[in-house]
Amino acid sequence: RILNYTAKAAVFNGDYQRAFDLIEEATQGASNKKSVVFSNAIRMAYLVHIGHFDVADVFFKKTIMLPESHTEPFAAAWGYFFEAEACYRLGKNSDALKYQARSVNLFFSDRYILEAGISCIAPLLWDLSKKDRVFFEKLIDNVDIISKLSTYKEIHRDPPRRFFVDLFS
Image 1: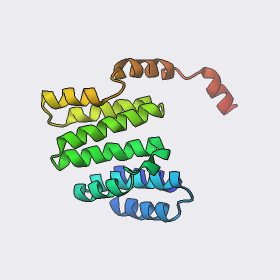
Image 2: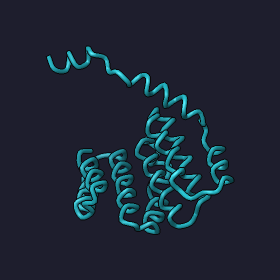
Image 3: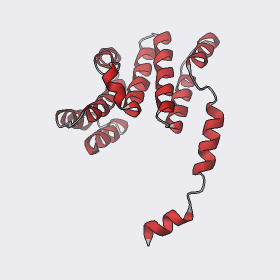
Image 4: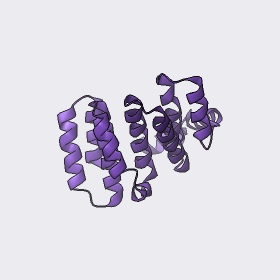
């Protein structure tokens, strides 16, 4: 996984050649299906960041959209997240919203509340009609994201002091 995380950092830092090389290395060295799904999600991020939306769309349908990719819901959710962005950029708003909702629901199913919140917020950056926004809200299985995020914030606001005492003693 270290190659995938390093590749992700390279993508988000704009070091695309390094990201590509690391994704290739991670994919070739993947020891199990979960590692492959992670590599595929990072490749989706890479393709979207470099503006290859058509390529990302085809890659998604050949990899992350397949049922075997859902053995790793967290990585699959990020794949759906980046596919949603690719579809939006290609002018396929309905597909973009469906994939974004799938991302939200996969994150929720795997108990990644913060990431589900990010997926809920992403379409707010898009130029969508009110009708599209209502459509998106109906697609999300758990629209009570605000209360979930509030609970998440409360739980994680003050890490137990004992944790830091144990960690550094």
